[in-house]
Length: 139
Image 1 (spheres, rainbow, N blue to C red):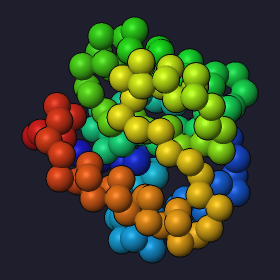
Image 2 (image 1 turned 120 degrees about the horizontal axis):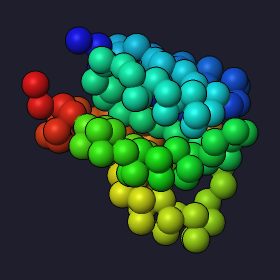
Image 3 (image 1 turned 30 degrees about the vertical axis):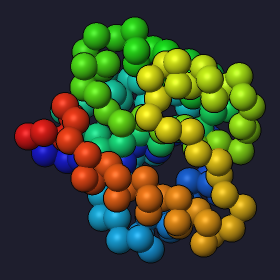
């Protein structure tokens, strides 16, 4: 059974940079990339994978990150999978962060300006979720 990292971001440079960071921190899981929330939602509804985490940008065309998280919360099947969901964005407004947590997101992180800072943030996130027991991680 695969446990991929689901990355939802329409910016190819950001996706490539994050893939590089994940490789550098020793993250061996496969990456599933989606350019918008609608594509990710379709995948999540049909996959037999047990995603390790969803890392989602906020601002994307077709379906943004908050809309995706809202749809996951409305869907009993997806909500009960309890896939860790963190926002990873350049836009950090207090109202947006409040809404993200209102939707039961497990984190809201700033896209760090330097590779080292990004590496530090991703390392922290992945160490935490690797240790954490939650419904989607218990086999």
